Image (cartoon, rainbow, N blue to C red; front, side, top):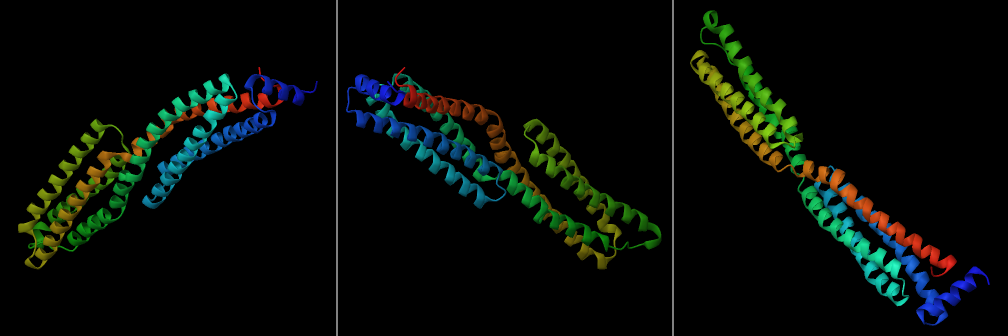
Length: 286
């Protein structure tokens, strides 16, 4: 007896149903198992793209794609389960339930990752640092560069030194923003923030010392520098708050570590299910 004929006989004997119906169910089960693997892979990939996206819009779009793919996976699970039970495929039913358990863990973890990724707090902090904060720091520098000493013979070099100190301390704060945004350790971030606070205090002290040393005509420039420093410090505080949430860093860490393991386990279950159903189609019931 040929293998196809043997499959028909065994399917009919074990499932107790019409041969054609049994073959149709087997075919549908194989299709659904293959689609499960495809849709699950789409969901995992879309979630990873949401984590790596460089705009809020892209993160939201990829997160939506991931959710849609996971819903499709769930629909396939709901359709496949009764078919396997109706065919009395106990091994395949066990493999599907194994995947269901792992998929539940995957969905919970992926939801956490996607919720973090769409916030994009590290990306927003970076944009503030490279945009408005940079502009405020440059305005601070430009305002101070044109101040003139009231007594050129006596205070020229002192004024230049104070200006240089003030500008350098603001630049020190700027330099620390990028590693703070990328840092995952709270203790390290706290140390950076303390250094920034010291730099801010030094900049303000330099401005206070400069005030009586500059010409009256330079005082508006000094006031402009103070306003620019206030703006920069306010932006820096926003950057620190966004950086502290660390949603991009945290979502990436989860995606690279925990999600990779759960994804691999899910894929192993689905491949085993697909292979088991494939063997049913050629060698019959084991």
